[in-house]
Amino acid sequence: MKLILSFALILIAFTACRQFKQMRGSGNIITENKTVGDFNSISVGGALEVELKNGDATEVKVEADDNLMKYVDIHVSGNTLKIKSEGLNNLNNAHLKVFITAPNINQIKSSGAATVSIKGILKNNDKINMEASGAANINGEVDAPEIDTEASGAANIDISGRTKSYKANASGSGTVKSSDLMSETTNAHASGAGTVHVYSSVSMDAEASGAGTVHYKGGGSISQKVSGAGNIKKDD
Image 1: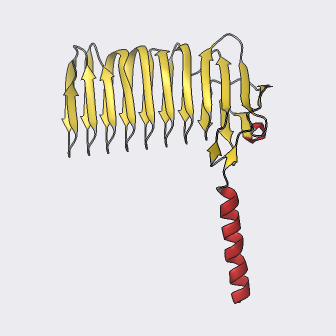
Image 2 (image 1 turned 90 degrees about the vertical axis):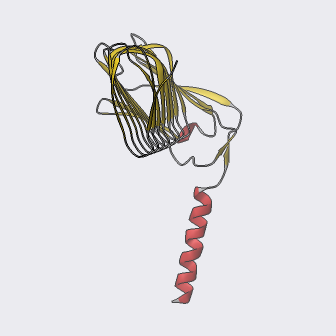
Image 3 (image 1 turned 180 degrees about the vertical axis):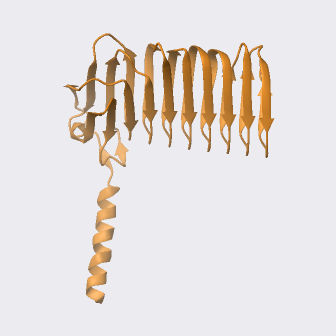
């Protein structure tokens, strides 16, 4: 019995070492073009950088170290382009970058240590939804009648542009920086240690709970609710 237990412990330790073994990029960068189906949403996870832009034709291209390319998984599920790095938990000097061009993106999800950067202006005739979690980032300029953002964990969303109706939510130690997003009506909520920066020209509903903070700009009317050590501040 002791022999079996010892073997099991050794196996667990060996598996853990393999899981957290550091992987280094070769430095030899290669490019692959991916053929995918139609999509209007993207979901990114892992240690990846993604550049996203509007365009008439759909294109997906991957740049990576030749020894790491096989770990990048890209496929369409439903209407979502899913991008993740499989088994890359401890990287050193790695190059993993995905370039996406698509005509009608309405949702971006970024998780883990992923970063999604919007190039040019991301436009949609209806709505754009953005969610960042873990230590992920989303940044860029957007233009849509309705925009929703949500940052949780230690994630960060940093956007500018314009919209008519805007919702921003930050929880955990997440941050939403959107005071350069010109919005008419805004709903902002910060909880935990979350921080939200917003703008409104017509009206705003702001709520801060826990140790959350809402910073706001603009000349619109404001309805505010504060609980715990929450704080709502008007910035110059």
